[in-house]
Length: 168
Image (tube, rainbow, N blue to C red; front, side, top):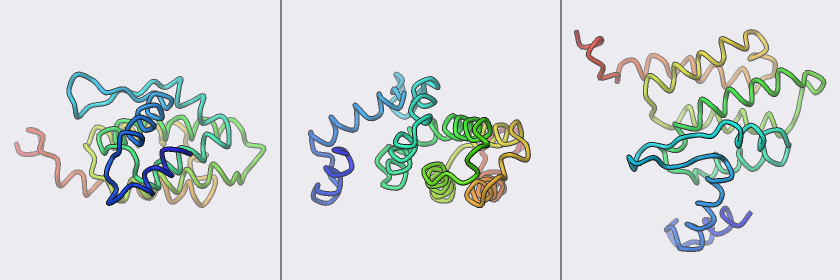
């Protein structure tokens, strides 16, 4: 894909105009739009859900996550919706217990969970989606690793939570 190849070819991972244009198109395709606040993004669930219905779409999103192409605020906004869509779709398509593209995406989500700082609200949304799916959220080793990463992230995020209730 042009954005990944351009990013790799760019000197010192600097966003060239070509990469910036391709990245903007990719974010629009994924349903990510920047709000008035420059550090916040909205996610259009329909876009990402449609993209994830295809194995190529799952592979694309996994590559974007693995290559860290998106800004951190975009990733943290996308993460709960992405996890919900992927868990829901993998739950409804029980015919393929092991799907390579789906497994790769769950592993990419796991990597993001381990490396990216996030708010308590983002983590709570991820946990709610996992709870809603139930035991199907543990259906494959990659899903188990993903759920485990969410659970391990809880105490880390809780320690960093600056909310008034915690300071109280």
